Length: 373
Image (cartoon, rainbow, N blue to C red; front, top):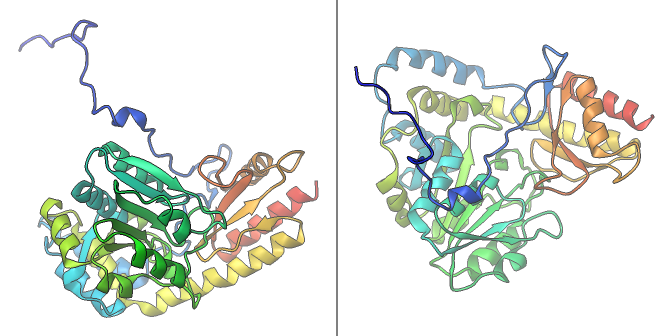
């Protein structure tokens, strides 16, 4: 056997594309607390109920097909999405979470030197993919804590090739109003792709919210991405979908790996979609607790941002004994894991996922005790 070659300073090591060195790895929400074997994890916006019983059955039934490649055409899930949302299955692509589909759009349409406008509270991974592709990211502020059409349009230049926005956004949970979205789509150059991230759209019940499907049917540059990780409780299976014009679908399909959605994920997602009663129950629970939590925390002197998603953002005093950092430590001491957002969100805030009845009650008790100190 040949002797292994030893590394030496003279030999060097492979260096990545220079754009990669500008990036920091994505930091996911914490999942463990020292001294607590079963902490209440409210840091990652996961569903407290998990998948529907129908989705779990489909997942287990798929075990007998694990030796087979998945359906590369994704036909069953695309048909189900089309039926539930009244969409053309031919304009749907499924993937390894909506994040992969955003990556495919970036790869398909961005070139080095292009500009990407990212609304302030858009998904950070979209920006990471854009920078890695050699594009320059221009951030459009969200002055009222939701994506602003005017803020975005004012930053459009001849180099703007893509716009990224999340509605509802994260970590605030607010959404772009339908009138704003229509104004944006009508005024963006037709060669500029708009990536409309609806990861939390399944929770929204507001009358002035537009999921974007109707606009995408007539706008060849609007791409709507959705996920099964939130309302449908399938975060561990990594499955999402994209709806857009045939021209965008064609570009994505040319670079999509043939089996990017696995057998179990395709089966569970299709079953989850068809269990509308379960999804409606999760949505109703979330809406009820958003109001109860908001009312309860306002009573003890905390400001809770209005949210249409499955989480809420709390602002704490900037100084003194009741700051967000101290609140996070207090919650952790009770075995509750929040998500600090001092980097990438409004300063002095914590984001907390809506949990089960018991978990939400624990948060309210803990923060009431914290504020009474």
